[in-house]
Image 1 (tube, rainbow, N blue to C red):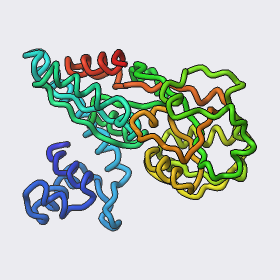
Image 2: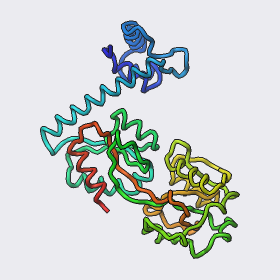
Image 3: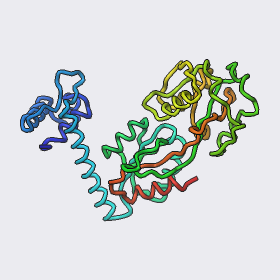
Image 4: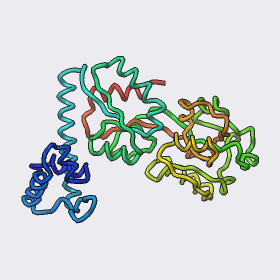
Length: 314
């Protein structure tokens, strides 16, 4: 078993025999023969060839999960050998959402590369769910996330604090119902404290009829936004769903709808005079962003140093 796991995994990753064959630099008939032989030796089909695109069988799902464990062990051993030989070489892969990669990662990685020029740093962007999946399969070493993870499986260290804020186009009539004194300026948002008095906040209960631009359900911020709406007993109309906070911010600026995003997004963004910003009256809006990794994996020198810089650099 697993005698041809690289071929099986390639078909799974590419979603087709033809694409996998091209990537492996072999003919499609040859690849099909290899996979068929593997299935015959095991006694169970790995792929359901009746589906288009091709899908895993129930057994195939377990087979791929087991291959992921093998790859994780192999990578851990490789990382250990590299780290044991020298502290001046190696690589590390960090995965995060668009916000995290915009806000802090570029500055930290620039300083990291100045100190450790021989360590290769890979940066990948993905939604929260995708990031965790890649972490579990050892495709990435570290994940930047605002979602608290299972402490039995992962180690999480705080990188920075943020606050979810409400952005509303100035032309929206609902602004007249919200106290002007509670609006935050562009400059105040960048230095917004973690703790804000209730008098400085607005209730979402007044926005039940306001159109919103939200992230898709695959993003943790959407989970948080839905929680805020439930807490306020509102179900506002959603005019658009997007993949990144930066996109919702841009459409909000064009007057298409209100949105909820992190105050940290404002820091790398150009000043915007077309919006009003408010702090939301909820205990769920103040949150922390973590750098996380699997608890049972070997932590390389490169990972240790990057974690250290991500959690100490202002």
